[in-house]
Image 1: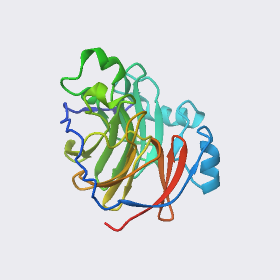
Image 2 (image 1 turned 90 degrees about the vertical axis):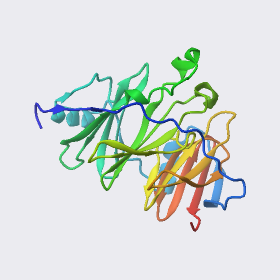
Image 3 (image 1 turned 30 degrees about the vertical axis):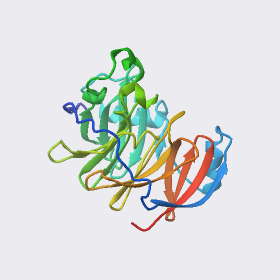
Length: 262
């Protein structure tokens, strides 16, 4: 790979669907096993207690610097990388201007650290018609990515009030890696947690913010449709899976769920 350009495919402006209409009478999407208060800053203790692992690398660490040296050149401005993590079939590097959020994604083979593909998500930054006076608060950055069976799933969001972007925020987008085109975008306001999961034919996501409803969502992987949700006590941050259980780290609560029957 030495000296090879890491080409970024610039994606066009996407659709910005509104929020989903989830009936209040819908069957529960998850079954609560337990929920306990946390100390807000004790994430490491939560991981250790439950035998969980975050598949992330320290952006400024020697391990990541060695990875970048093997990649040589990125055909895009680079400030970072801001995040480096393994998810699905790839290792991901998210780059971006810290003033505007993460904009570029590069995927590499986690075994050989050789470049696979890259995307420029600059056009995902703001929805059409967003109030100009709110734009400096509402840059929709890349949050997480998962590659499965030739499809890249990404979450993009801003971390402020939904009203500031007219509630057109926090999406999952599915991109066909063969054609480099968008297959679908989810409804708005389903994904601003640090990560999401792809489990079988479903995607498990979370959304929440101060003075807004906080939910764990279940999406259909084939088209992004919301299959169901469950109310959380506070905004979700991390969603991890172990032995068939979902471990959800929220702002002030640690919850464990199992998937209900579809």
